[in-house]
Length: 250
Image (tube, rainbow, N blue to C red; front, side, top):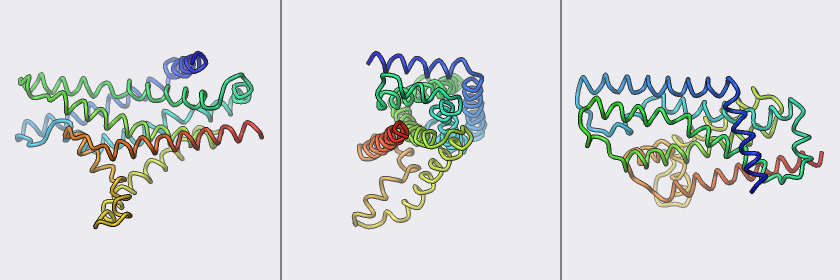
């Protein structure tokens, strides 16, 4: 655990001492703020029957931020190490491959959480402007954050895997983005295929990201998508470990 904590501090420091990290946080805050400006305009025009979080996830800003931020956050994890020549030094150090991958993923996830903190500020601001302290359901907000965390962990795991495949950050970002967009589009196709009571319908029914996120923003916790996202995250992290192990012996 000591090695893991050391690597985690190292990776977190790399995020917060670089300009890229603050640019990502600034862009995230801008997109979240922009979405809530549109929300406030809509609320002033008519009463919305949906919860604030449910309206927010239906905006394109939510999915753009989720799909773009993950590959940008993870593109440097392995690719930069290889480009700078420090990857070989890290791999010859007395550390396990699993510790390296988990430390890098954990640092990316913690940075991802910090990046989404403006969402809480925006929700509290809407609550204050609405003048109704009961307008914000904390359970719904918590379940929404759970859904964002699960989806974010999956996209970050795919980004880690993409970064482990190349030594160029741009290529890693493009690969991670393609993985995320492919899964997102597969969710729409899965919605059409998830018909009937067959086993294929049951499998494809677990990939409908849009519908799952809709349930989260309504405060509904379904164990099946939670297990699905956690399993896919573990799968991509396992693939990343295997790639790191294979390069160690080259």
